[in-house]
Length: 231
Image 1: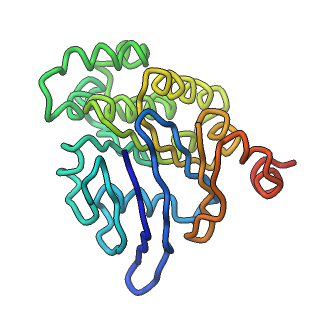
Image 2 (image 1 turned 60 degrees about the vertical axis):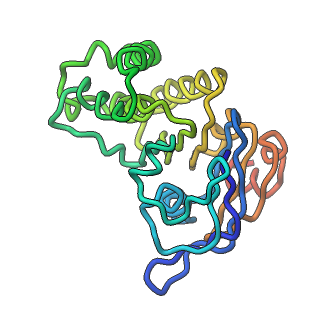
């Protein structure tokens, strides 16, 4: 579904991503792990068209989308749950969700699905989004992305700032999406959770992919165990 080849990204004159190669197959859950500042967010911002200073290729369902505008990629089926959630705090929960449904005519069906996945959002649907807890806001951000009926769901650090209990709730929801066939690219610092949930993974350090493989194999890798799992 997604193939990134020879991706180089710059911030001004400074190169921050170097010759990235990775792919995501339809129905897969793939994680891009690495420390803070490794270049994970820059990578996905480039994929969805927010960062235009790049070379290489990003092929989504057979089309090179490098340099396309974000709104075009949204219509093609790419949806991002950003690290900072970027909800509209002074709008009710339901209106935040409905904004994600622009572009298709199955709003009621999709909304019912999101409420089934996150029942608390239905309970809070008239509440201003800014008054939700951190975990509820993360659920809202994921729900808004799902309202677009994405073909590829990209999540940037969904566990950031959440308690262990809420992290577990969010990851169980993502596991359900995976079981239902959703294609997911997950960026995550919580390496244990990411590798437990995903089929495959790539390790990004200093703007370069240094390791890749099946999630179970990466969990047994000595570097991963020492650097990320505390073994």
